[in-house]
Each structure stands twice: as C-alpha cells, then as structure tokens.
Amino acid sequence: MNVSVLTRKDIRRRVVSFGSKYLIAVSLVCLALPFLNYFMGDPLDFTDYLSAVNFIFPVLLPILAVNFLIDDQNTHIGDFFFKTKKGRRNYLLSLFLSAFALGIVAGMLLLIFSLIFQFGFQVTVLWEPVLLSIGAYLLCPLFYLSIALILAFFVKYEGVTLMTITILLLILLPILISIGAANIGLSFLFETPLYLLSFLGVGSVAAIDLVYTAVVVLILYLIANWKIKKIDF
Image (cartoon, rainbow, N blue to C red; front, side, top):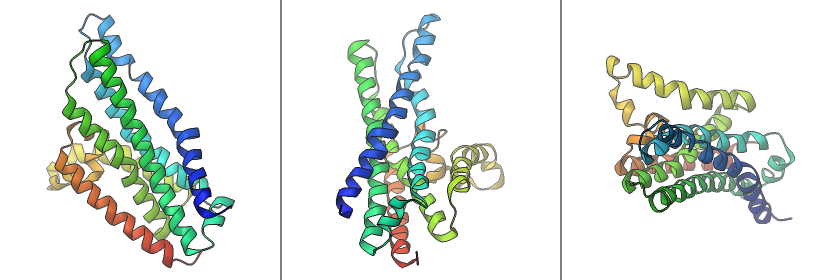
C-alpha cells in the first residue's frame, strides 16, 4: 500500500469513524440550553445555542486533533510514514487535513442547525457571528495541532504529557488571560490565537483575527514541516 492511499485511509479513520461522532453528539446536546430556556418561559433564542456550541467546540476540536497525533505515536502507522522524507511530509499533511476536516464537520453542523432554527423554528439567526464561528472552527484544531507538533518534534513530548499541556492551553491559560492579563500590562494576549480561539474568545472573534490566526497557523506548519524533514527518527 503506497503512502497516498494510507493517507486517505487515515483521514477517513480519524474524522469519519472517530471525530465526527463526538461533534454530532455535542451539537445535539447543545440544543438543551435554548430549549430549556424555552420551556421555562423564555422565547426560543438561537444565540443560546450558538453560545453553547462556542463554549464546547473550541475545547473539543483541539483535543480531537491532538489525539490524532498521540494515537499514532510509537505505532506501526508512525513507523510506516517516518521511513522516508516523503512519508513524513505526507503524514504531516494527513494530520493537518484531518484537523481541517474536523473544522469543516463542526462548521457544517453549526450551519445545519442555524438553518433549522431559522426556517424550521422561525427564529432569527444573525449570520455574521455564525460565519465567524465557522471560520474559528476551521482554524482552532489546526492551531493547537501545530503547537502539539512543535512540542513533539522539538521537545519530544508524547502521550499524556502532550495532552495535558494542550488542555492547560485550552482551558487554564484563557482563564488566566481573562483574569489578569490587563492588570499586569499584557493586554496584547487578548489579541493572540491562544485567547481568540479559546472558549472565551470565539464568540467575539472578528474577521481580521481569523486572517491573523491563519498566518500564524501557516508559519507553525512550515516550522513543523521543516523540522520533520530534518529530525533524525
């Protein structure tokens, strides 16, 4: 089996057979918030659903993406790809394509439920926040996967250590930025992907923020691509 065929199989294995199930489950669970408010007497509000999804997806998407990398560490899959430089480049590309596909699935789910709210329940949907959230979903798993790859290639972090650092960056760091960054003169942290793509920042992300984040992701990808060709496996 050649590398290209195995790459396609890996993308299907990661996204279709694994990641999509969690994303669909979360999308359905998030319906509980607007309908709970509705049954308590409030009007059905799409923003309740968007807030719930924007709280969970920015955490779930990176965890799934980094898990793709961790699952392949020290396995026959990694060994197969890492025998040649071409295999390494294909492996890196397959990881990024898998992470991007996760973002696409999350974005499609949000789009579908937005249409259901607007045309099925006759609820007003503001499309600009929806589209910006979809853009954030596309970049979120790519950004944190890039960081995980840098840590794996340069510092040799693996498994539980790599996932623990990812979770700290996803949850603890945004909270610390929100609480204390302005007080210690580090307000610029609010404009970094570490906050903008977090569960605290996605709801207020702007188009220019997504462009800036895309550039950061590209730079991190190029660094990882350079390192994976140079490192002695």
